[in-house]
Length: 185
Image (tube, one colour):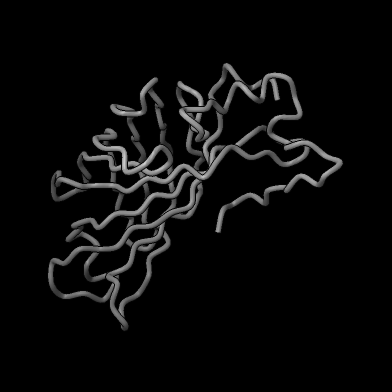
């Protein structure tokens, strides 16, 4: 579930993300599909980032995002996502750094890169899904991004109840805010 509740327009009300004059600048159209505006989007700290072994008796870990940025490019290919999560029970910090390598569709992308933790750096492939730009009344707009991946993190295998260095499933519903140039909201 996303961290924010979106307001759906009624027939008498326009889309809240478009009701302010410059909010439409945060959404662009490629073909007939909406995509986020070019530029940097910040990932707010404290958002949940789930990690689990994906088996019956494994414990799910509720890691939290410390910081991060998504930088959207003109053609979406080459856009980059960099963020760091902390698993509070183990104190393990994991950095993710990836670039969009393939468009699965205009709103769904594959980003390839690396995870970095205490035991080293490993390759990772993230599946990213752009779910739109939304706005709650009185708040600045948020880009809703779904992140999914299978990651190899031996540092956390005991914490999730796995004894072999398997892949953990990572999943998050993140809200990203436009950077300082949009802070007039």
